[in-house]
Amino acid sequence: MMKKLCMEKSFLVTLLLVIFLCSCDSNKKSYSEQYDTPLNGEINISVDESFEPVINEQIKVYQSSYPGTKINAHYKSEADCFRDLQSDSTRMIIVAKGLTREETAYFNSKISFKPQFGVLAYDAVSVIINIAAEDSVFTIRQLRDKLSGKDTLGDIVLDGKSATSTVRFLLDSILNGDPFGKNVTAANGSKAVVDYVSKHKNAIGFVGSSWVTNEQDPEQVAYQKQIKFALVECKRNCDSGSFAKPSPATITYAQYPLVRPLYYILKENTNGLGSGFMNYLNLERGQLVFRRSYLVPGTMYFGVRKGNIQ
Image 1 (spheres, rainbow, N blue to C red):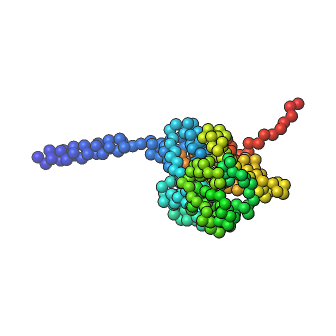
Image 2 (cartoon, rainbow, N blue to C red; image 1 turned 45 degrees about the horizontal axis):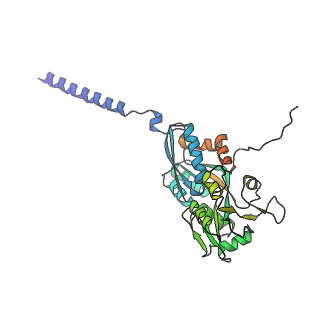
Image 3 (cartoon, one colour; image 1 turned 30 degrees about the vertical axis):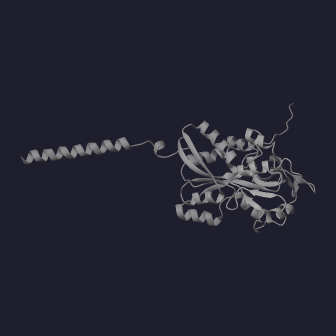
């Protein structure tokens, strides 16, 4: 009787062991199924809304080259992008500024490694006006007076009242920390700024150049029939009294004064999809997409050189 009982217990233990091993085997996944890689997987990234058109194009090219990947871009204000990075809801953000020393130290203490960041391209804050506007040339002082409310002629429209990269840039570079005037209004994003200016003769809008300079984009070409670029006082690499509008040439030579960098910040210490997308953006194909969108590539030079054939 004891022998039979021991045999039954032994059989039961063996059966449970087999069931456990089978269960483990069925839950076993390959590395690429468990973790995203440059060729497979899905990630979320947060992107400054100012750069939505060009980053949409970048994602299309990357995903068409690597069909096993999916990059979900969430477009929002610069401040919200940084909040996402701090709250672990994303591993990568694309914004108009890098990390300070204090921010780098914060992430190093929190996640035990320093995030990577660097310049991908150079963008401009375009000053746009209605096609019928009479005043289309501005000095830096005139822009300051309009943004501060000292000059109240015309409606001044921004892509938000606070927390956006365009707002931060104008506060830092034009107003030198002074507040906006009461004549400055906030639209619901860059597209809303372009829409407003296209319908109001006396409006002046400030938007990222990737929303209005791409002549390969049919929607932007249509807008260019309703708006035009204001000329802004040139301070460098130009004759005295010169004015410039945003273009790859005027951005490259700093002739257009409202230029800003486009940064990636990557919180990933493995060779994941974030690293793959970052490398793509820094290398030839990604840099060419920036160039095609009329931004200035930040890591590669595509100038045409003259040569003599002997």
